Each structure stands twice: as C-alpha cells, then as structure tokens.
Image 1 (tube, rainbow, N blue to C red):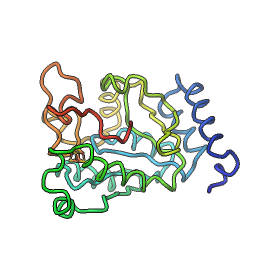
Image 2: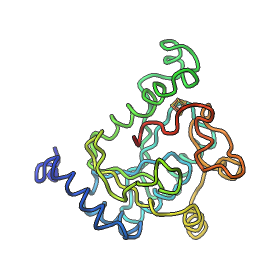
Image 3: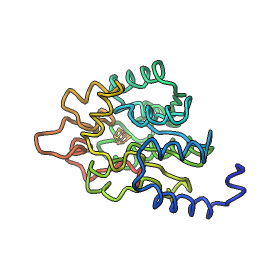
Length: 236
Ligand code: SF4
C-alpha cells in the first residue's frame, strides 16, 4: 500500500477522483496531466495502443520518463509494434510491454484456433483485460487516450474518474478533444503516429479484428466489424 492509499484509503481515492473530475472538466490536457504527475508521481502510468503517441507525448512533458504501458496481444500489425519501438527510442518515456500468460500458439492449443472469431470476448479477456489488470496493480492511476467523439459508448467519458473494476483513478486527458485537435497536436509537435492511420484505418487494434473504415463510418466502425462487440473490455 502506498502513502497516498494509506492516507486516504480506497474510498478516499475514489472521492479524490470524482472531485478532480469535476474540478478539471474544463482544464487543458497538460493541466490534467500535471495534476496527475503531482498527485500520483511514479504510481501513475499511461496506457497506449500505439495508434498514436499523443497522450504519451503530453504525459512525458508533464512527467519525463513516465511509464507507458503497451499490451502486446500477439495479434498486432507490424506497424503497431514498429510504432511502439519508435516511441521507446525518440520519446522521454519508459515503455513497458505487457504480454498475456499464453502465447497465441498456447491459446490455440487450449481453446482452438481463431478464438477471436468464435469468442472475441474471451480472447480479449485473456489477451488484454487480464494482462492489464495484472500490469496495473502497482499503480494508483492510469491515463488513456479515450475521446468522447470516438463513439456513442465513449460520449460520457470523464477527464478524471474512478475505475471501479480495478479500483484505480482513471484519467482521460484528451476526452474533450476532437479528431481535429489530435491532428493539430500531431502536426505541431511532430508526434509519432501509426502508419496505418494514413492507410484507411481510423482506429487500430489487433489485426484479425480491425478493418479499414468506409466513408461516413465512425472511427471505431472498423473494430470487430460484423460482430456484436464494440469494446475490448478494458474500458467497460
Ligand atoms: Fe483477440 Fe481480437 Fe480481442 Fe485482439 S481484439 S484480443 S485478437 S478478440
């Protein structure tokens, strides 16, 4: 247990998160991340899907050397792994790669091949949700790149909230940003982005569960297309 947890307890942390969500609703992304760095120090990390490095870049300015957690499911596009490797080299961050307990081959042997087609919820639980739960256990707060404009399921994302499932403070510093805001930040700061974003993909996940989006579709329409699934369970 950390000093902050001892001082406040889990209920106190939840109260802190909810109060910060109200206080910081109109704050800029750098202000939100400076608050996170001041409040949680090394007990704070950023998670990144390596679709782009915008939140990692913002966080590295608030807290140089910040931990950036990446979930390597074993199913990523080579471009995503390349983005992760480049972020590690060019940015002042500490990239931590989490892997599932089983390799894809071991999972295939136990559950049969292409579990992502037959039971994507179980596949995501084994390859994303559980590794993240294990990887976050030493942190009090984690930041995501969730944005309200990405899909109706994300429309109420708080800038700071309470992650009931993991009992952590969850920070979404760019929740109020639009795609134009992201594009402008990338252009202004030369932030690394996944090359697939300029190849028809608006949201990048695992290769078997991601397709290019069509004209007029929302950014996440290419994820688990044709299946009754819109989120991997990390944010539910
Ligand atoms: Fe499996 Fe697809 Fe989920 Fe990746 S996105 S963990 S391949 S179901």
